Amino acid sequence: MIIGLYDSGLGGLSVWRELRKLNVKLIYFGDTAHVPYGEKTPDQLVSYFWEIQDFLQSRGCEGIVIACNTASALVLPEVHSQVTLPVLGIIEAAVEGCLGMSKGRLGVLATPATVASGVYQRAFSEAKPQLQVFMQSAPQLAPLVEQGKATAPETREIVAHYLAPLGKQNIDTLLLACTHYPFLRPLIEELMGPKVQIVDPAPILVQKVGGLLGGKLYEFDHHESETEFWVSAHPEQFQAVAESLLQEQISPVGLHQLLGEKLS
Ligand code: DGL
Image (cartoon, rainbow, N blue to C red; front, side):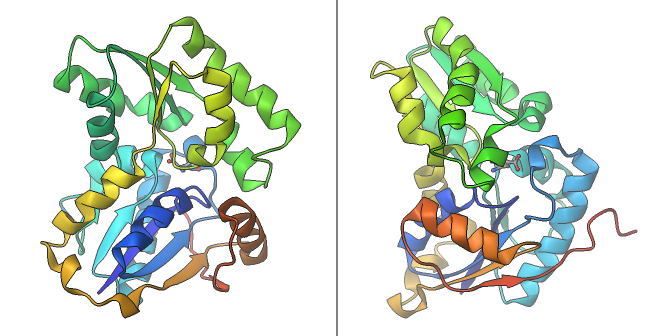
């Protein structure tokens, strides 16, 4: 059994580090030729998805986790009736995590495309209309993580700038609604202070993966716990920044170029 997961680049590694606990073989795809996804249109993201699905399937994957809020928000609703493999996004897990935690004032930090999609606004108003939700778009954060600047002094200022409006709203909980942001978590926690609880949906998403594959996951032995890493551009840069973010070495990163825009 092999599970594929993908993101625009490094962000999905915050999901990968949880998913690897399941002890199945994983294939990680970082679409680094097209990062940031937060600035892309739904049509572009859908066309990338089809190519990535085909690639992951050709490598033997039997299920795909979209380790990216932007693609989960914009791609899944478009493709779910046509996919050839079971596909799981992150939005449901994120909503579940927040409903269990927020006392009434929730901040959501996300990419511009995720905010514009309205996916979280709709999900929370359906699940808990009395919850007050404050959306904050943070266009520069995923690119800063990609550039290996998660702990750079300039990043601190930019994160503080995005968090300030949420601080003014007295939020009690903050959803990290982009998989790149858990790599900024120590900084975000420091800037928001101890009264704000942080939700990273990755552990909840991983619990749902068993369901995606009909419970088959738990039948596997522990020898399959390995990962292949692939990207659509700049494998050396991906590897160097990934190792610095994860504080461990990863296996060599392969290059698989995508055609990019709409194929038909
Ligand atoms: N990590 C992705 C997300 O969760 C995409 C960030 C980006 O490429 O803009 O939204």
